[in-house]
Amino acid sequence: MPTDLEKGLEEALARRQADGLYRRRVTLESPQGAEVVVAGRKRVNFCSNDYLGLAAHPEVVRAWQRGAERYGVGSGASHLVCGHMTPHRALEEELAEFTGRPRALLFSSGYQANLGVVTALAGRGDWVLEDRLNHASLLDGARLAGARLKRFPHGDAAALETLPHRARLIATDGVFSMDGDLAPLPQLAQRCRDHACWLYVDDAHGFGVLGEKGAGILEHFRLGRSDVPILMATLGKALGVCGAFVAGGDALIETLIQQARTYIYTTALPPAAAEAIRASLRLVRKEKWRREHLEALIARFRAGADALGFSLSPSQTPIQPLILGSSRRAWEVSRKLRERGFWVAAIRPPTVPAGTARLRITLTAAHTETQVDGLLDALARSL
Ligand SMILES: *Cc1c(COP(=O)(O)O)cnc(C)c1O
Image (cartoon, rainbow, N blue to C red; front, side):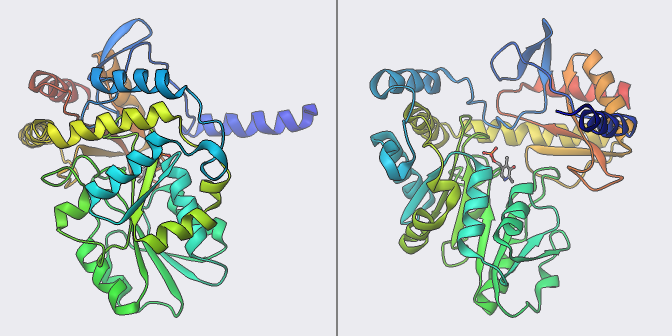
């Protein structure tokens, strides 16, 4: 690259650093879990999305190994060429059954699923309405579709009393990834019925966690396919593996197979990954104690934080943000926690709105009560 171009990049990076917005990666030397090893030191991990503690579960690992022995490690092609294999098909059938929908379609990631669905269903001139705090991939989907994107105030179904002519899609996160609160789905479903447009829910953080069976936010609100025709969830968070799926009716799924470019033009997930996800789904269904333990930890953390006078956001999910304001302060508190052996991510703009930098504390079923109490104590000393 010509040196003047390099120089421009270096200057922009230096500005980012001066603004406290520079992002750095940390390397884990252990499997994912409540305790991880970083730079040779153990840390209690309060920033992963492995909400049920399944990412390194022995049964899931074994399913991956057996899957690799039986089907190899690579899928070899996209689903429409020759990469669609028995494990993918079985997993799709199980996901459809679990979510109570006619069909499910696997994507290689949640990011791709969101781009694929929005671009397949909305085109130039169509309106797509999205919650202001939606995940980047839903917003990017609308931009890529060339649709007219309108972002409505967070969680405000009343703002959708009147919808633009040609409103195609209302898309929302189910559980908001940086706030942990829930979208007002019953109200949004009503708006969509009134205006004959699709409601699309991204349940990345609810699937496996919410609802009696762990089927996610729709089970929590007791909503069905007539309320939310398009359900998407990811398989790399509570399910602990990777990938995503969309569940809905036959015509919806066939349309995605024909038109979703992020489905058509990408290599299918490794078949062994699909086998691991199937094992993980069995644990989600069988081991209800994971959700119960997680719920008890959330209650314990909130009661403890309250007693210490922290002002937590009103979230009943494993995502418990502590909003600190400036990026510098969030980073500083995160650093102090790290010195005390706790890993909590500082989330800064542009991931969250300016002035709302925060600690994004996530609890998982792998944590113990002692670890949660330890975090509260470390927070009291670090704030
Ligand atoms: C993580 C996440 C995604 C992206 O899923 P990946 O499988 O990680 O690509 C999409 N939507 C939401 C709300 C998420 O939190």
